[in-house]
Length: 329
Image (cartoon, rainbow, N blue to C red; front, side, top):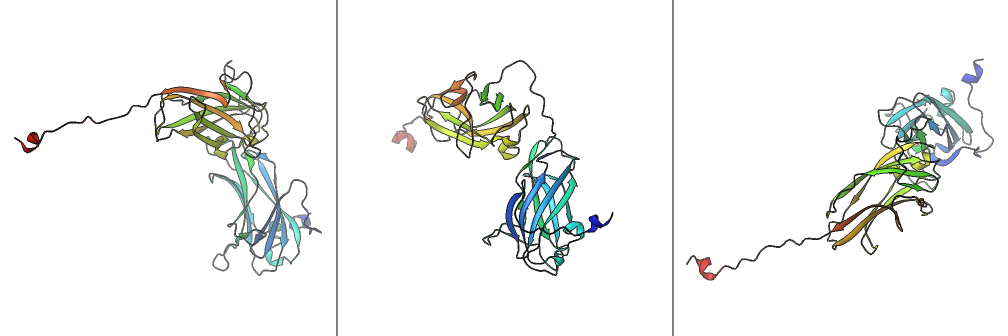
């Protein structure tokens, strides 16, 4: 009964990846290649189990026994837990590896509690290899297949950290301001300024609801247009600034994030200005179509606000001083 627990991992015949495994092909120094990673599940909540499978290929022998660290972290460095031990649950130390050995090694750990207001959020599994005694051997640097330095760790593709049940939809019977395709509804926008001022910054809070699981990590654009429809200022940022990309949203989930737009400090001519917004896929550059029932439809997207801007020129009155006054006569 104990033999499977303490047995070394089975060697694979080749390095072909299995369905669900993400190819990494990263070299830890000249000792080993991390061929692939698999993280399950793709959405996990605090106190739930996360399984990480690493596909290794040994490149050369080493007398050192390196520890492999597997840790789940958010982009803001919030730590959600991990595991660190010798490969093979301690039964297949790196000093035992032979060139050409290919095997799968699994790490399993429970997620820690999240700080209030953190979830949901995108996280990545960080894989590093290091020596417990740093005085004898430094941490192993990561190189790509061409030998270029990639830092000291390999990261998985993002996974969702949060509860599986979506947030309740906003209360009330008010329809959304707009629907973008059949994927995302804009419930409300706050923070619009009553006036337009040179150099001012608009901080707008958008409340979104996923009508379905979004197909992509969408970007929000903000365009400030003059009365002739000419672009004067703008800002393009991914939804939630990539903290929680839209491709991870669950159907029914409600998300609020802030986007900022700086009004040019240089002179804008007097006239009418409009602020429009929309969503697009940064990969294909295709915009999500705006629904016909949008509260304020505009050829450039959703109309958020209109301002009448008048430029007042400051001037200093000219005072003529006579020569007599200058000399005190």
